[in-house]
Length: 171
Ligand code: NI
Image (cartoon, rainbow, N blue to C red; front, side):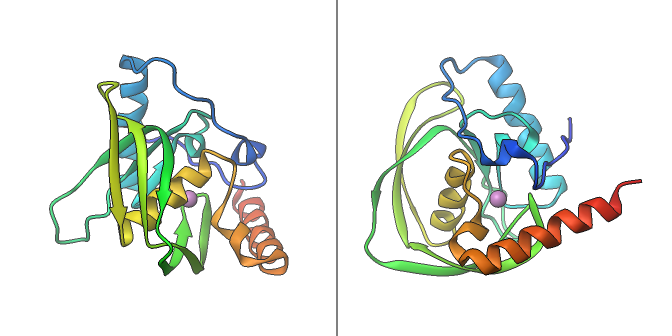
């Protein structure tokens, strides 16, 4: 079990486009295990590899609530192939943007194509909470943060707050 450090702004990696995984091997599966350990320890419901400093197109998620059975899911090279017209609003947060929460509107359902941990291609429909999480995490693989949807003023205010707090916390 390895809990990795989660990066925060102004780390430029958060703005980089993650690289596609060309081979799903034991190194990739070890990274996925670390990502789950890091996500559950935080605690959080989703995490992208870039958030632990590895700019690879890999995301993990678990939408299960506190008293539900865990539903861990890892997606490699995830790609949205269809979006519903219907929208869903949710107050999002992000482990890389700590203590900031705000409402984001996204498609209520998306179909995602990805590779599983065995390297098999899969396609899956995500709805509700799962649709919100998978879109938020796929955004990370493209260098996008949820605060980018909030308009320039809010985005700058939130990012400033995170950067200032990180600076104060440094010993
Ligand atoms: Ni996030």
